[in-house]
Length: 439
Image (cartoon, rainbow, N blue to C red; front, top):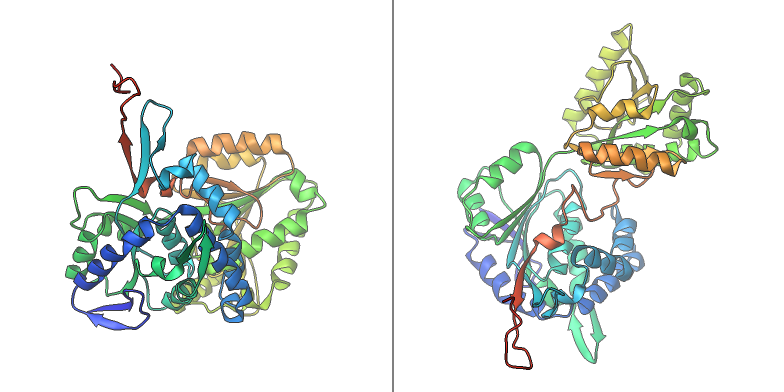
């Protein structure tokens, strides 16, 4: 059975046997969104940004402050310009500079498979579909649907005036449906896949492979955001610098966010050998972790992760060449060893730390699986040199401390908005009656 939480603009849980009603409603209603000027869409989302801060219930949602900042008009316009160079392509045919005009047409219906590890992920995925004027159907987990529904419900109530016309958030929302169903229901998964003109997949390796293999339209575009790994590093100058504690605090917030389940969560921190003894670095980490906000420290930890934390702590306590520093409960764990390289994630606030002679010693461990590297250095020349090598090896993002989870485009090396449209071209007659096609 399919549970539908939003259909045709109505926020009411209904049970459906198939996707026919959902596809029909989204297909019919996406025309209003497709005809809406991009500036009207970004202004409605900009108004949602303000509403999130004003509404005390929305403001309390995890990640609400970042969502609000991300939805600001200037940020959305920057994202569109980065993806399309000229955002007017999204509204009408415009000069390509190559002898013809182009337009970026929506692909149609975007079906989103969203993992449950990051509660706000479904909303960011949805906004990418909205900015490209597509209809959107999101498969979300029961545990995370309430955050998405709250944000979309607020959008539905908004209205603006642009170029002398009124535009309504409900026209965007009517082109959205939110569903949940058991992934083991093969028939539902296949029908959901067949409804898609584009599939956005957020999940682990098994999920990406399984969803990619489902029956689909021959013209379907697939955008996979699969499993990735992130880590952080401090060079000598950063460790010895005046901003070390501040940078460390920001990185540790990134570590504890989302129980380290996000692809952008640092799992290992490397420290370049410096004049500061390593035990002082460990003590600074202990103090900074203990001083983080209670909301980060007291987050619920799933049972299977709690078991892994307890087992790993025990293994390190019994080892002669490993060391563990831990909170009284399961809030955080520092795992120290001399093994080179990256570590299999434990999650739940377990951070491995290692000392290296040079930050370049980490480069051999960089692969196409690396999502974010939090690089702490005040030397911009060194930062750029490291980033050049690391991104050649496969890393997607070299970020500042505290910015590991900042959702930016490109993400995972993908300019997603550009892939959510079809580029169509128009040759026009010249004034002399000829064609501007190449002869």
